[in-house]
Length: 235
Figure (cartoon, one colour):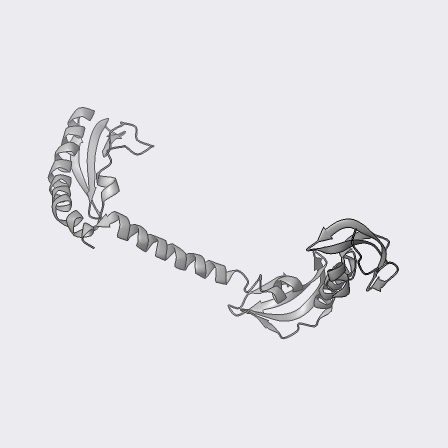
């Protein structure tokens, strides 16, 4: 082993150097150290001499705990956090943090622990999230319509012959009318619902529905596939 500076017995922060080890970190000797709290740890010479490591980790934990205690006891009265104004501390605790009574800009009263206020995790009584959710819902609906609607018509609906999961006839747009046992046919197109009559048999109602599909959907899909779809590809 080559010569190296002997740090045995030297103290760095809470660490007292006991002895060198055979380990190296970036070419520097790793030393066995004893922390004032009683723990043993291993630290390189560079980290010891440059002050990067001054304990086994207990010092950092204590500093974090101290900052946490300071945040807990800090007077937040009158301070504003997002839409919330801290009114008064309560006797309640949440994860050891003081729970504050807060007034939201919308007028509601809510209770938030000091950590969530200071960290910005809670910015309103919940109204902010509700507004964001409504805004996102509107955006999602707009995107859905842009993607799935053409001239007020949902392509995925008119191109799908699968009946509703609650259908009792198994035929899309055909329903059994319980009061007289007749079958009715309906069709929806461009936001309107059309009644196609009632029939003594399911097959006749299905035929009426099919004829309406050919008349309404057929012309529309022909136009879409020949004109609109080509225009989409040129965007």
